[in-house]
Image 1 (cartoon, helix red, strand yellow):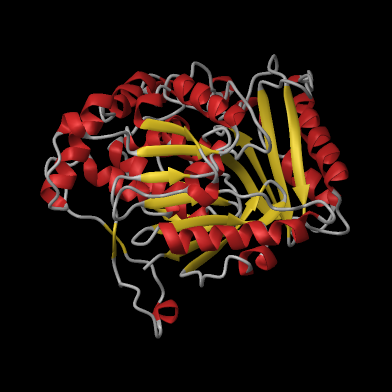
Image 2 (image 1 turned 60 degrees about the vertical axis):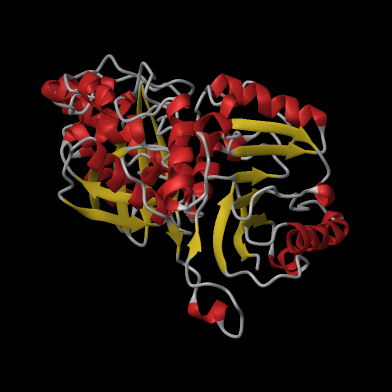
Length: 435
């Protein structure tokens, strides 16, 4: 299962959760790899992961992993497979390959694997399948790394990151998959799962390292509360993904078609479980009304705050100084069906204030990737730090900083940091505990 570099641990945890929710058993614990996670389990697990995962891009079925020292070795390993048993001759296919080897380039690797598949069909059926580069029914994914070739079949098709709710755009929108993983990393998803319990207990975030606490009055455990602010919301992706997690609503659950439908290797009895898996996941969603009720119950019984369900305000705040961004965020939230959980307001970052004693603040400020932009952004990152120190005491803030230089301008010591790739850019997901 593929994901963004840096979100592998979150994906592994989510895989275990979805398997548990669907009453499916993994053959072994998820194994983290670079930009992906390996799992073994029944075919029904493949279907459940396609419907249920938020932090994955594609669910791949590996058909071969073998030593290969040259392109001829790659050809031999791929051609010997029984490709007509994987997909029918009337299905179009394409190959997408990557290589970390300087002597085996990706274009040559792609062509060699395509030839091997075609020749395997010719040898066994005397016919050849058609290659389709734009919209293939079958996508073959290959990776060459340190003398090993791995070839997989894509069971997903359109990537899971395409949620379908982004009907309005704005400058440099944050990807849905990345936003979902970053929100999970704050502990928000743990809080959401606890809120679904009959008698939810107080949830803590306890991943502040010992070295970060030296000489500072940072608590070992930070209480998680159901309030989340994005003061630079753009198209609202952070808040929308947080709201979907709060409702336990899986964004691909109503999707009609996946690539596994074109594969011959998926057993027919497994395909008959599609509706069962859908019903199982759908039954665990909570309604908007229940969400407010559960937030009220958690605040009253776990946090000791008196709160009636009819007095609970929307737990999520989308804020931006640009009215067009606010309008885009609102439209996207409405398309996702979560707008009632989000309050939208126009406002400058420097004027941000919090109305609760604690909560989560997430933001994706500009990175300054063009020449000269980074220098201009230094004062803005200093403003971020000043605003957090002055107006957000008791909260934990998470900032997706473009690089170490900009992060240093915040003027606060990060209590946790994680390297994350946003597209091709290496960024830092930084936690600041504000006490």
